[in-house]
Length: 337
Image 1 (cartoon, rainbow, N blue to C red):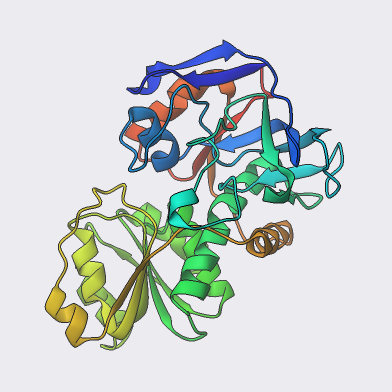
Image 2 (cartoon, rainbow, N blue to C red):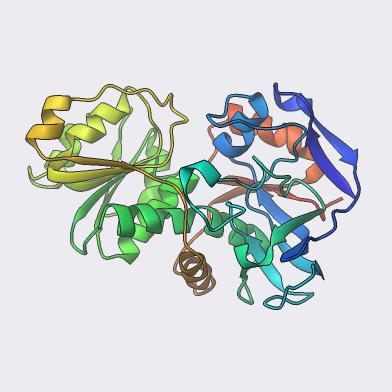
């Protein structure tokens, strides 16, 4: 089969399209013919560059969120059958303890390939009528947004949420999950057209944080009360303090991203005087994956997709992600010529 292989860390061109053996599914695994896998700034580009926060062992095939068709069953698999349409969850184990986290495409060979093996119990069925590209994007980001907003921030209906990077993969999921949970949403982004994306996804208000003072605008929109929750996934040293300043007393900031730099200033006085909580978390539950895919099939969640490219253009896809200002995910489709 054809697969993208990284044998040394570096720029996009260290990725090579190679002929490698089709993997054999081990006990509990299924072999999946890949139809879609997304290109992620952190878990693909940063990993490939050798700048990921956790150790990565080479050689490696990237791709954390493939979806496709079950082609073969490993020994002992009963919950899936050949022909099932599935997505694959990021983590290769259901154990979320810090010392045991292993991610597909980071610590195990991933989905930039014509075939990939995954544990059957880490797959989710794709509803009929939902295409693979949409399933990949929805199952990658929307369950994480549920974890951060519902489980970590304990978001309640009627509360105000400030979503940073509202046109990005996780940000756009955050806007939609917050509305799904009954919250009021401020979509914050770095340009007017990206703010409009958040508004089109259902946000109640928007702020261009490159042209407006984010904290002042958030206070104005909430009539001086501040937002109850900040959904932060950028980690930019300029915008983070403004988002933090927009929080109301007893506000909660949840975060699962740092591609804007990751080291940010923090107003400690405001933190303790206003009883603010900051929570960093990743992960998802199988139930949330199923809920997200079902909602997408019903038209309740939208996936932002910029373009779909063949596997052979993985290098160009990484160059676009690292240098573009486009909106939506780039998808690789190994079935394309």
